[in-house]
Length: 196
Image 1: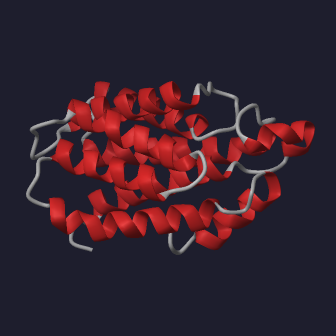
Image 2: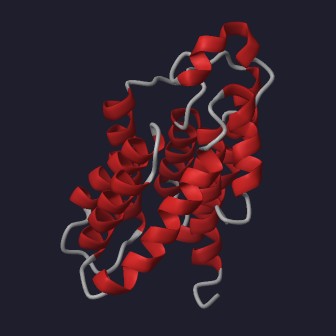
């Protein structure tokens, strides 16, 4: 999905950033895909940690450290696990969000990936508490993430390169929030059709 949307992400970034987000994300996750066969025998925590290290070393700008922090913190709460239930996934998502906030110091409304991750995690958590299964909970998370991604258009950037634009960042969808939505959508698609 990131490869298919790399030009779109780059166009979003060209409007308020340095026009490399799509290229960086595509390059980083292509390296992740090459790395995965080498760690396929590890537990989920080990795989996520390998993803983190690959992204940190191969994705430029702020995205590498931020996504790397997401996967690294997520890896710490699922260490030793071979399967995840709904509670495990919620803990994974919460830890990942904490990692991103800790690394980037962003808050809701700053026009960053936090503006997608936070509502997605909240929606997933509410769904789990109400007894929804993994697929239903992730669908609610993705729906919340999609709306939150669109809502970044009305926000003024307070973090990153886009913050230098001030009011001129209004009206533009945040590229990091968008790539975050694509990742959650990909996770939902994988859960929906695991053999594809």
